[in-house]
Length: 142
Image 1 (cartoon, rainbow, N blue to C red):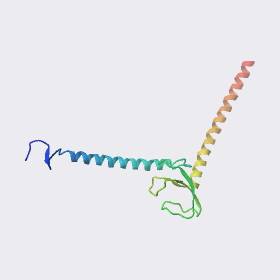
Image 2 (cartoon, rainbow, N blue to C red):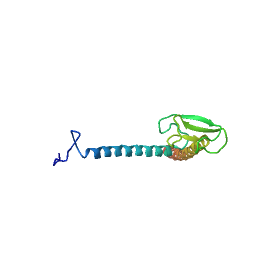
Image 3 (tube, rainbow, N blue to C red):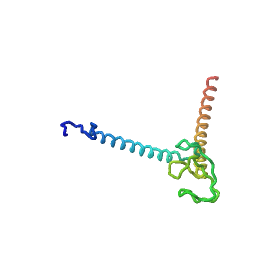
Image 4 (tube, one colour):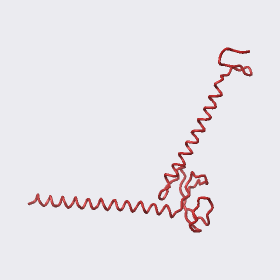
């Protein structure tokens, strides 16, 4: 039985021919959202790997591990017994932290040195302001 409308009979049910397209579009949208979340997570990990990590972007806490030998492909061949900052939920998928301790501490020291330089500049500027104000006070007293 052929109808002149956009609906079709299949197994005694009236179906919309666009229903499958809508389902496929929904599946595609979910797949794209999942891919975007994955890309965002990779970006978060890359952006966060500076200094001593406080938390992994996945939400896991950071452990201080000692590695007797390189076990993962991204382990650096520093020395046996190397220390690492590692996510508690670590899997070797690029979405979790496993950073050599040396690199994290080195970057943290660089940040602290920059802060000390900024503070010393601020202190020097404040000393100059105090000197200028002391001179103005001396002028006003005379």
